[in-house]
Image (cartoon, rainbow, N blue to C red):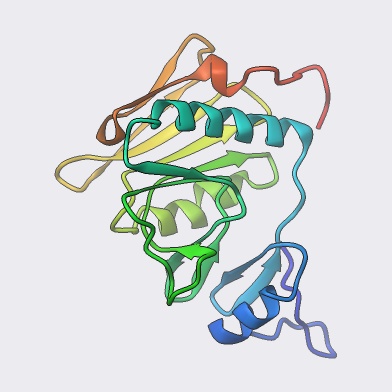
Length: 198
């Protein structure tokens, strides 16, 4: 990711949160805000989009009778006071808690999913992992690899600690006990074209 606002020497120029929202509201593409700097979101591949929709579809069907809502990558999440992200899939339960009355930014995700590429893997497993697991409302964080069959899951236990598991078997399942969810790995990767290099 490359910060979008720079001075004459090419050094990034920070923005306040208020400046970020004013800027982002005028743009046609999405921008994340990280520690005072604004970053354009990269476009996704067909494989990334397929996996994202597969995950969203499974979640939507399995949560149909629960008071939980599955949202698209267009919904922004306030991670903390100076970080605003666009996860690939967000689930919140009950009413959305909006950031200062904005209807495009929530503060109470219960489940976050990132579809990870070789380029975004370090961010998804590092900076975002650290940020997301500090969210009080979050019950689970799932990272789905798009270059191989691998679904990693972090779930919050009753004692507040996080439990990590990884599934690399197409016949496997990924459970999110607090939401009563069992996701099929085969359905997550349904119609993914592995023979196409991305």
